[in-house]
Length: 169
Length: 145
Image (cartoon, rainbow over all chains, first blue to last red; front, side, top):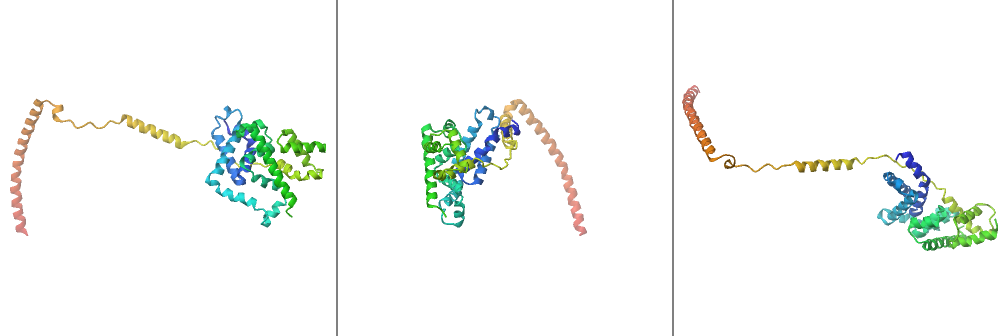
């Protein structure tokens, strides 16, 4: 397989992989590295790629697993610091300024969700996958997906309401 | 867009019973400016979800058809090693004379060597004259000193 052929297969979904990685790893740099890693892995399997019936789903699952491993491993210990920065939103001027942008609230609220809910929300509400695809990707039962999704959406709503009502300014 | 319809969809949305098309509709509704005041609180959520899909992966990925030279070098090294092991023959243990020759042959060889030694001794006897010669030269040299 030539490089251009490979790129034609990969290009339509490489942004999705990146967004998924960023949702899980929070930091843009980490997500870029993860995406690069996944694409290189795919490239090294380029001869087998034609035998996969759904390359996108395969790549998405790889990304998911890679990021979860990453979060588990000690290499990700730095990420926890990044993470905790988000909870402490009222102290610094910087974060207050950021918080004024209410769209960014949602991103921060989503960063606080458990990983599974993050993934379901990302796949459904951002990438607009159908439930069947999410079942396959996350290896979850349909009811579990609906429960996780509903919980995630409600948590986001609740936290958003809190911010909205108390106000930051 | 009917407001009532939107309210229903929002309710369904939080119960996770909306379809992708329904969610598209919600996103479209909240992307517009005339949002009902009591629904405005949801606007950041749906606007964020629409916006999040626009993020792009811009990093260049180096996709070189890299050959695993090291792998093939190690394979070749092992192959050579195996060939070496296969063809390696340890040097045979030293053979004794008795294994190679019959008693008669050994005897005749011994005789031949004895003959050679005898003649050799004859030759060395002649060297006695040389010794005598050296004595006289030494005498001559000491006198000179």
